Image (cartoon, rainbow, N blue to C red; front, side):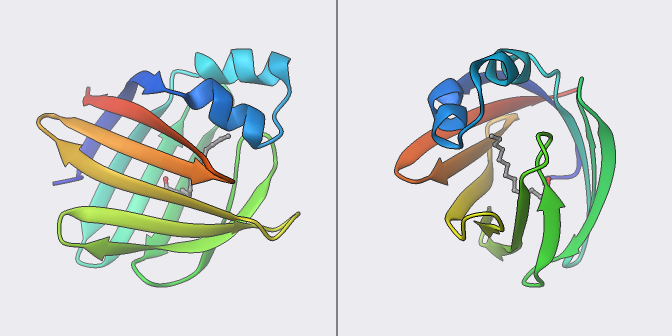
Length: 131
Ligand code: MYR
């Protein structure tokens, strides 16, 4: 269900979320219009994700339940894993610089992919459309 190419369409509270993450205003402004596109290929419990934005193009491989490393576009390093619960992907990550948790959820709602983020009491969403 997650397979395909998804383009960020809109967001909710993402600016506040980035502020809570400690991202400065200039970077927040750029990140708000980053033209993020993700291509997800799931085969069983293995995922291959291509991420492209104005900042970078990277490919990520992970297996459900297996810890991996991921760096945000600003260089912040995370370590954690995705798990699938029913139709929901739940990611639990930890910031390596301060040990604080960042959780994220991916779910398909209608024909959109909704990714929610939570960090230090601030929640945000980015909503993607198929492209
Ligand atoms: C992937 O499945 O796309 C790769 C792993 C993603 C890890 C968690 C992503 C959290 C992104 C938070 C972005 C907020 C930037 C301030």
